[in-house]
Picture 1 (cartoon, rainbow, N blue to C red):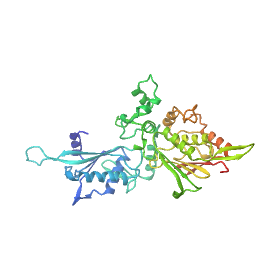
Picture 2 (picture 1 turned 60 degrees about the vertical axis):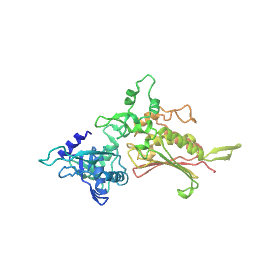
Picture 3 (picture 1 turned 30 degrees about the vertical axis):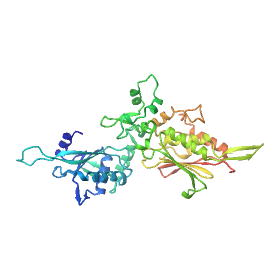
Length: 414
């Protein structure tokens, strides 16, 4: 925003997109505004349509009181701490330093002096944020608690706006330059105009202000590190020595990051590296793997394709035990699906992500396949492969309404 435009908005006073706050010091420490107060105000903007928060302006008189130049760092540190530590999930905000003119008193000649201020630009968020006071939204020039029914509607709207799925929504603070061209070119035909094609594919979309942004699907599939914007969009892989979860018996662990197809490939390699091979006697000695590689691979693809990316702070957990694999995926089942009918019906939560995964080559272990087939036979394949190897079916279950868990039993004896 141009400096004069901001000065004009301040002159008109607070509204649905502008909050003013004077900064008070006691010695070199900030006495006001308080951390919790800032968190509530920031979250209210993010839960609404976004806005500007200007520190260094008296909200009553609309005069620029400023922030001492040598204390700007302290105020900026406070804002960053509030965004990262006092709001859940953490809030992405732009923090800018500026100087604004102080209004001259009547009768004084000459231009007014300028004083430093800190401008915090808070975009409308993909997520619903909770601050110390609860859940707030911006109504006019003030914040209001969100009532339970309205909160439920807001969470639903943020997960799916109208007919737009969550993976098609714009991601704040991204620009077309954040798109990894080499990653995006996988989905663009050679004869197509690249800039036009990425928009038709839904990798770049417009936000409410008409600015070009990466979509959630574009971030997940076409940036080198999606976790920059979607912090929990990764796979936590852990190998335990025994049959229970115990940090003292972790023998291998890593956080698998990067684009979704890379995550699938590296998570699959983690399982292959760590699963055991045993021998059984039939007509002769026969080596048997602990798990069906086809079942494991299909389960990992389904996990990244169908997880709920609107759950901001939950990651996919791949935990290997001596007798099983547990794969925990954020999000309940889409539409009216239940665990007992997953092999009979299908529903797609992330159509953009699914369409992009379907164009990616599979792991070298399965060279004739694409990463994801869109025939809906993933769960039947997991069931069939697991039963053929172990004599038992995999187990799907829901943890509340927020997580789907798959348990793949290991082949015996090991």
